[in-house]
Image (cartoon, rainbow, N blue to C red; front, side):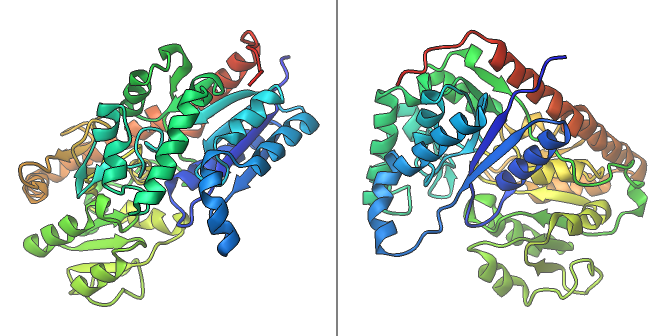
Amino acid sequence: MQQNPSILLIHNTYLQKGGEDSVVAQELDCLQKEGYLVHSLFFNNSQKGIGSLLRYPFQLFFNLSAFVKVYRLVKKERINIVHVHNYFYTASPAVFWGAKVAGAKTVMTLHNYRLFCLNGLLFQQNQPCTLCPDQKSFSPGIQRKCFKESGFFSWALALSNKLHQQVNTFSKKIDRFVVINPLQEQLLLNTRIPANKIMYKPNFFMGFDHQAPPPFESRDDFYLYVGRLNPEKGIQELVQAFQENGKKLLIVGDGPLANWVKSQIGTPTNSPTDTTTSTQITYTPALPRESLAALYQRCKALILPSRWYEGQPMTVIEAQSTGAIVIAADSPNMKRMVNHGINGFLYPLEPSNQLNEVISIFEARSVEANDGMSKAAYQQFLRSYTEEQHINALKLLYHFECSSKEHSNQP
């Protein structure tokens, strides 16, 4: 029986926890349950003080401490594969060099667009933006101060990315890229990463009990938004739409627009499950995932109003695992998750936001039709996002990398 390879998972956590952090935690748990010897190495960007500020531009390029940590851990634990989820920014691309010099194979999962865009979102001035990848230059991002709204920090990050391109960090020190949507794949191909080094593997969800969804007629009369309260998430347009249509909406999340949301709708609700109030739009801060299950099971539909090119939002996967219908802003990536008119609805943002028009179409349908759509949403989850499918894909990836011909590890 072939022995499982030993794995080192590396992740630079976010100051505000999001779907990416949840994916990493799930993957770690999943691999350990399957009997893999998994080590983890986490970095964070929360260091404070003048010393941290002075080190910041250098860490963007190469964190020597991270290099040494990875090198020593790979050697000591005889790691076969180093799987990086996020290196930005404290870990830095140095982790790939540490892994390769120590003799490990390297895998990187792309959760955003940081390799191609200084803010990682392909979003600027309240609309999608692909100027940098289109021009194969970070000059537009520097001019627009896309990183931290700073010309200096944007320049420093652009320089770091450019230098790592020139020393072949991304093309030679990463053996396999894992993408979660077709846009990421195309952007990698545009940077001359060979197609045989790219693997599509969707996110997965292992949290709820995955029982058959409740009948649609048992759902309550409210819509649900779950996620960060950031401009690119389309929160302002969402609130405006529900102020116009007068329907019930529950917003769950934290972020820079939280105070704006509260100013528009009043004070937060004391109970996130109390959606029977006369207030049409209610708000509660972010909830733990286990507390969201009842909301997904009870809502009429989940709304995803994002204005940016979402990667592969966990909220959609979580909602579909309960049979919740998803109504999402149309984008190339969302078309892979939501089949319009079959397991949910997509609506255009341009030339005008048509969310309310789609909600009207949705509510005009029969209960039987929406019950069928709910079941189709659940089937989408079973086909694409279960733990079993995910671990099978990881096994295939890891064992292929370990059995493939070893390339030179010289930097």
